[in-house]
Length: 217
Image (cartoon, rainbow, N blue to C red):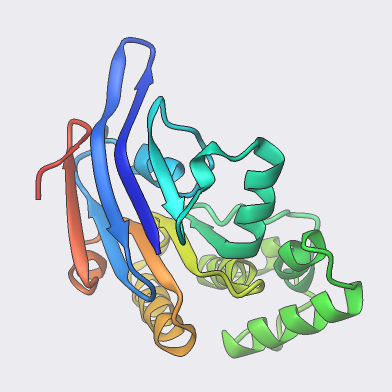
């Protein structure tokens, strides 16, 4: 599904990625691990088209999405990719259902259709009674579930998650991990996870270890 070849990225004189090759299959779960500064988040940003590599290609179903213009990339991400970040990145003035429905609205769905899709997604994640709550009135685990609902609402082919449980207590983290894998089984969505959590990494189909901008295992 996703093919990256010879990805390179520098920040000034610092070489962050040094010729990365990586494939992601449909419904596959890949964990990306390594020490801080290894290039994990940078690689995630390249694979998801949030940032452009200095060299190399990112292909999605045979299309060079890394070479698309910015507006085309934004449209591609909205249609095919979901994101879950360590800090949920919810809009504080929006309710749970309003946050979850945003990608559907951006894709052109009507407000009624987007709201219904968000309601169903949140209910499936155990938040049916929290639809009208603001993020400030929700626990960290609940906020991250809203973020997962937002990531899933457009039925993406792949979800990129950067330390998705890094800001949660151990019980909430375990619940989120179970949820992500349940979604993979239910929807066939691939997951690419950057994590320091060894328990989460061990559940992946493959673990990719980065060090100094290179895949070492």
